[in-house]
Image 1 (cartoon, rainbow, N blue to C red):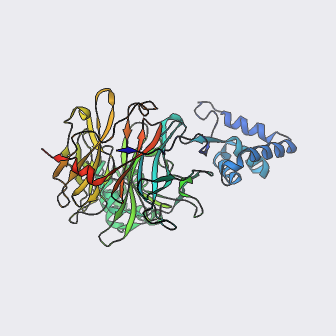
Image 2 (tube, one colour):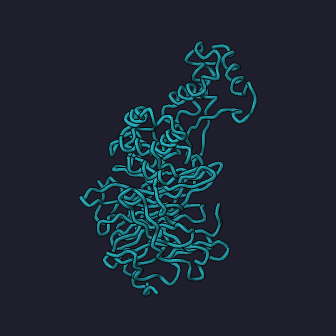
Image 3 (cartoon, rainbow, N blue to C red):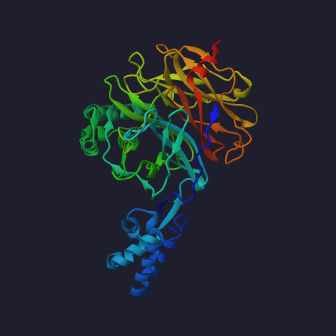
Length: 485
């Protein structure tokens, strides 16, 4: 592949604001938070005004609606203030400021990108395509979130990556659309298929909102309340349903300002390796979908994002034996009426899984396992399959000696993706001397490519130190493949 001379590097100036509670992990009756609020309450009024003005002046150009954030954070900690009702607006704002801190979302690393056609294709010249690039951002504590960048591809191999300026915005929670089939699949996955859950699931419509959910739960027949596991089942229903949520960004926000930030306990330690794809349904309607790994510090879980505009996002869990590991990648359309995804349930073999009519991803069909020297540790996908006349082009990764990652490719049959037609006998991209040093050395890795004007465009993370771009003619890549087996 031909490397481009344009890339993205981690920018420590890209910061969000988060709630900060001093001493929140201290097991004392009177925490540091109580004492801090008392000290602020005892400040003279003129000192409060001056300190607040200085703080706003120092930070407001880096964030949107900083005063609103301060008031929100005050509301979150006001239970710690015995005199909360008597504090002035300025004091409340100042309390909020002391309970707020900046977090640099990509101070540690920027990596694992994917690319799709941008929803806005206006104002372009012939041969150009505007692209939306998703990014794994890693900050302090190895906490991952999903960010974005915008680029224009073409004509030819020309590449322009837009500047990522302006304050960052984390998505606001929005009313979610819940699905009965996903809730049922989740309860079955976790071993909670019993009389209580069955009765409540039968009473729910196919899609429902939070109010309907709570109404149905409150109408549980009296005789079921006496069952030994009824309350635990109700708690599990709430936990399982809460894995779905929605996030929305302001209409005037630019794509590169939007940050999908962990919003549930399962995501508390990160949202990792989003693989975006532009999905076209059987009725011709297109939407953006992505899979990512939710991590809570102990275990992982597969999640999906869906959006029509990359501004409104619906987040849902993935259920079933086919998605019990990292590296899920959706096909960009149905194949013979089947909804398919690439997976790696055993941690080392690229497989193919199918979604059944109960929202459960089925045990996978193996496609390709460790075989060549540069992939003997594991193989996996580098994003969703790309449709070509010759077949489904799957960009893959392999891990070899010294945990060195390289990128290669497979070709699957268009009508029967279970059948591997051909494979690339060598690496398509490997870390060179300029790419081997970084947060995670000796790694090149991508979460999704696209084809534009006969070229494969692949963004990739280089040792988690920066994001690079590479291109190669699709015809040349296909010609270099050898028959599988």
